[in-house]
Image 1 (cartoon, rainbow, N blue to C red):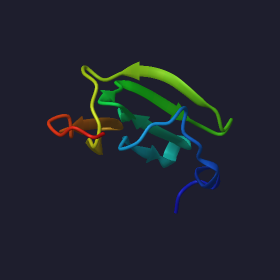
Image 2 (cartoon, rainbow, N blue to C red):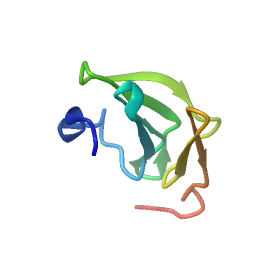
Image 3 (tube, rainbow, N blue to C red):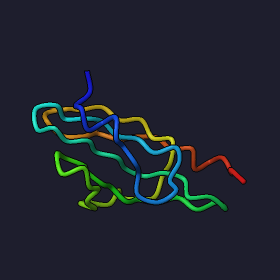
Image 4 (cartoon, one colour):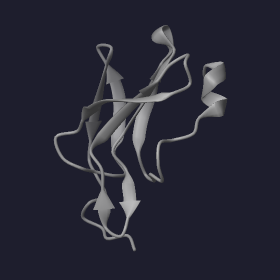
Amino acid sequence: ALPKFATQLQLPGNVYYLSGSSFLNSNTIVACGGYLGKGLRTSDCYSMSNDLKWTHFANLTKPGDGLASVIINNGLWMTGSLDKFLFK
């Protein structure tokens, strides 16, 4: 089950097709990348913990959306992107 705060999830800005995961041991949700509209993608990574506030903590090496992610060794590995497709 997701942490209780996950039901109150409200992403920063209008971002679609982002990817992330939850680190249940630390009650943290991580979300990276995403599509901003008009062909624009973001490389921003945010985390949310018990304070229910998104905090920018990192950037992907390049903007991307529709990424796949998996937790490995208590870190988040992300790959792929829909950047070959143009959303309008």
